[in-house]
Image (cartoon, rainbow, N blue to C red; front, top):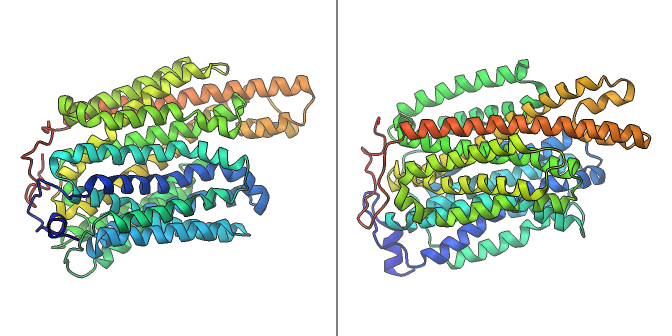
Length: 529
């Protein structure tokens, strides 16, 4: 590595490199591709669950844990992984995470039982926890403030597009290969990413800190693990179930202990005083709302396309492309638009676009709505999301000095993950509740009563009925689900609209980064604004 490259990433924490690393744009491409590989996985797996259940004789509970083991471990370990990345160097954390993720994928593809697959999915989540914060931490260190909007736009596009192209990729794979292809696809992607990182991405030296904050590490893992498990399981167990309430109560206690401990530390794992900074809090909340709407909407739309419209897995996956295309385009354009609207304007307009798009979808969608009409609404929602992700990440990064970039990156990832998990849980619960309420009017009895539980069950029951009865049941179930989906979309639209108002009035007006922009100092990092 040349002396220029070394100075670029190893400068003292208070210094600002206004030139940036010589290989920063090539490295950005590699890091964005790495992020696509990791975020692609979960959405690819969702399309493979029916085939996987048949091959491994997996129960519904098994399938839930195969999906949730990854999410639970990933979210619970993000803060700890970000802290370790700061200590040992972000590139080392990134490479180690990719080895765990890719190795876990390869072994998962060879699993012969549900238990084996659940374990390796958890291993993949452990690897991903190191990858996500490390990519953004390296980008922050490579790019000077004036260029970060473009870099953040590319990173945000990769994070969103990876989620959205997963169903298409999964559908295409399952047309020719078995369920294991959902895991084998990760191996070449990870190998290519590792080669690219070793050849192009510069090393980010670790930072000398005190002893590892072990109590904070344990408290963060336990607290986030309990919170995510409570959210994931609440739709099935019930939000007022004893286990759910106990988990949430313990999370509050553990969270209070974590905050109290970190406030007494000279070098805490998480700068909890950041939560006194309105810019940081509102930008993080905006990211949470974005992923709440994204995951919640995709969760119900995939069922709508496959069951109500009768699309194949591949065609249903293609249904998410309006989201992906408009999100990618607006993420790429966000630096230019941010220069005019500033960060606050971008977040307000983006949230408003999401609210309007979801509102139109909720008020106009019927069982026979053509895809072209839905595509316009989804494109509007995707464009709004694309407008927000990079500016919100920039606001979070701008709230801390560069030496806390890994911690800020980890917080960024935690908020995204919690928003997505909450979106699926809350919107899923609302849709399920409304569906059952609508189907109660059908007064189903006997074996047909199970059709009132959910839409997939209704279609299974209809498959065993004579044609006239089957048609009546599927028509009623499809209508009930569509009404329920629209109600869920209205709630997501309301959340986005409230977010737009709060951000508009609460977020301090921050100028766009310019050539002379400076990093915040430690004192500037946590203003009580």
